[in-house]
Image 1 (cartoon, rainbow, N blue to C red):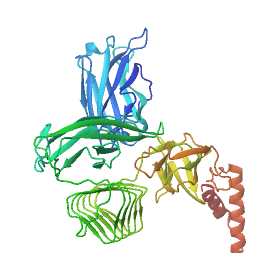
Image 2 (cartoon, helix red, strand yellow):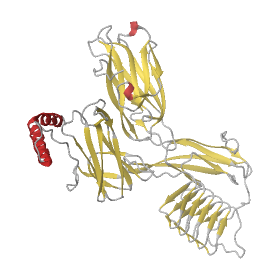
Image 3 (cartoon, rainbow, N blue to C red):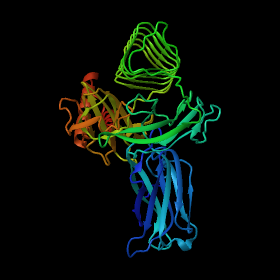
Image 4 (cartoon, rainbow, N blue to C red):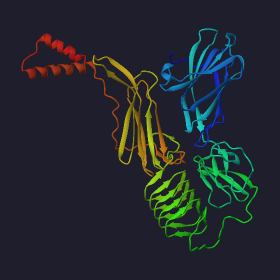
Length: 548
C-alpha cells in the first residue's frame, strides 16, 4: 500500500473527552475517549467502504490500550497488529491500526450519522501535542473507483485535574494484599489505609500541624501497631501545577473506631522536659521541642522529630523516620521510609524504604535501595537562546522526509562554550561499482545544561533541498516534580554569532569549467611525464576525467 496523495472527501470533527486528554501520573493511569464525527460535504455524495486510523505505538497510550466503537450496526471494527509506517506509506515508525469497515455495499453512501470512537487506556504521561496520527479513508464521489486518501491529524495531552477518592480503612493481612473496608478495629489491631488518586505526593496526619504519619507516593499505608484510641486520619494529596505555578491540594478524612480503647494511655506525652537516669525504652519517640543525644541512638519503632534533633553519633531507626531540622553527626540508617526536611547528615544516609528529602544535605554517601526518580516532564522548545531554571538535558531530532527526495538539514546547539551538531534527512552513497543510492538519515543530539546557564539551539538546511526535513527540540528537566515549563525560559530568537555553522552545499561546476579543469590536468600530466601524451590516449583520458 502506498501513501495516499489524494485529500479526504469526508469531513471529520475530532473531539476528545476529557478535552484535552489528561496525562497519566506516577500514581494513576488515566484514560479518555477520542470521537470522530464523520459527515459528507454539504450538497455532495461520498461513498466510503473503509476508514482506518493509524496511531503511533506507545505515544498516545503507554501500553497501546485502544477500545474502538461505532454508533451504528452498519459498520464493524477491529484492532490490527503493529505495523511499520513504511509498509503503509507513512512515517517509518510503529503504528497500531484501527479498522472501521461497512458491512454491506448498500451502506457505502454516507447519508446517515456515522460516529467512530476510540477508548484510550493508560494515556501517555508526556504533555504536549501528539503528531503523526492518520485517517486513511477509502472513498469515491460515486459508487466505484475507490481511492485511498490520507488525512493527518494531531491530539493534545494536558495536565490532569488532581483528585483523591475512596479513602478507607480495612483489616490488614500481609498474605492478602486486598482489603475489605471497615470502620471498627480492636486495640492494637493492624489495619490498612488505602485510597485512589493522581497526586504526586500524599501525607497522612491525625492533627493539624503535626509531622505526618506517612509521606510518599504510594496509594496505601499500613498501621502495623494499630491504635489504642479512636482516631481520625486526614489524607493530604498535593501536586505542583507548572502551568499555574502553584501547588494544588485535595483532602479526604476517615475515622477509625477502636472497640476497646485504653483508659490509661500506654504512651506518655510531656510538654516540658523528660530526664531519666537509665534512658528511654519504648516503641515510639516523639520530640516536639529539641533533643540532644550525646551517644548513639537505636529506635525500634518510629522516630518523629518536629523540633531540633542533634545526634552526635550514629542514629539507627528500625521503623520510619520523620525529621525537620535534624543534625546527625554520624551515619543515619532508616530501615523503613524517611522524610527529612531542612536536615543535615554528616555521615552516610541509608534508607531501606521510600524517602522524601527537602533541603537536606548529605555530606557522606547517599544510598537508595529502591528506584530513584529524577526526571521531570519534557518541554518542547523552539530555536533560539533559552535560560535553564534547573539542571536538565536538551534533545534535538532532525526527521527524515516521507519519500526519497533531496532533503538535508543540520541542527546544532550549545552551552558553556561548547557546541554539538548533527546532520539528518536523506543522504546518498555509492557501492563498489559506483551505483548511486539515496537513503534516509535521521539523527539526534543531546547535551546537558546547568541550572542558571543559557543555552541555544539552531538549524539550517541545504539550499537546493526539494523538501526540508522536519525538526523538533525538547528540554528535559531534572526534578521529578517539574513540568518543564517553569524549568526553561526563552530569552530570544537569536543564537550566538561567533559559532561555525555547517556549509549549505557546494555549487555544481558547469560544463565549461569542467572542460577547462580537465585540460589543465592533462597538461600537468604531460609536464610531470616530461613528454607529450598521444592524441588517442589524451582523448581517452579527457573522456574519463570528464565523467568524474
